[in-house]
Amino acid sequence: MRRPIIAGNWKMNKTAAEARVLIQQIAPAAATRPDVDVVVCPPFTALHAAAYPDVARAAVQLGAQDMFWKDTGAYTGEVAPGMLLKLGCRYVIIGHSERRGRFGVLEPDFTPEVLSVFGETDATVQLKTHAAFRHGLTPIVCCGETLGERRAGRTDAVVTQQLEHGLEGVSADQARNLVIAYEPVWAIGTGEVCDPEEANRVCGVIRGALGRQFGDVAASIRIQYGGSVKATNAAAILSREEIDGALVGGASLVAEEFNQIVAAAPRR
Ligand code: PGA
Image (cartoon, rainbow, N blue to C red; front, side, top):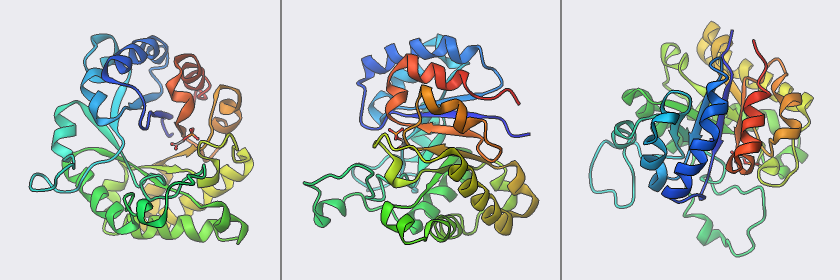
């Protein structure tokens, strides 16, 4: 039995003060679902504020949106796994499509040169995933195809390759503590949700790939769907057999929306 996990990816939104307000608004609803892992991933600058209020501590767990793989050193602007742990983080999102420079919503001023700032690759995903396990953080490893890749019939191959490479060297034992987020790039921030049946199918493909990598452990790895999840479509998505939760962007910024998504998690 896989425990549902609903995570809010706040992206580049919310100051520390705003984070404190939002977490107070979602903690009571989260507390009514002790059978669900409710996670929020604020920007680095709001992690401390989000971790601080006592009301949230038990009901809402904390995650980061990214991290570097080294422990310390001359890496200007980077944040180390140990720093996140000390702030109370238990989760870290790794390889989000936006960090890979793959945006669901067109960014006309992002030239290829500018896009190279978002330089995540399967190789860096692999380094970060290993670093997360080394430090006892649970990685939420993202995968997903672009619209072009989907139209070319390459969806299954793309997600399989991202995971095979990104998770190379991870042991079956470590994989028990792995979360995967299937996020079709074309569905992120576009309002264009993937048909739940199709999302379920791809999550099944992902579980198959995990089975080849980790054997029986694959049956216990949680796979989230992400991409325009909101209160109105959450139940249809979360009720699918292969989908164990959601990674929620825009809708996680509005307490009422996020609370309804948490409430929509099936009681398994
Ligand atoms: P969205 O983002 O819910 O705003 O589409 C999801 C994500 O990128 O994690």
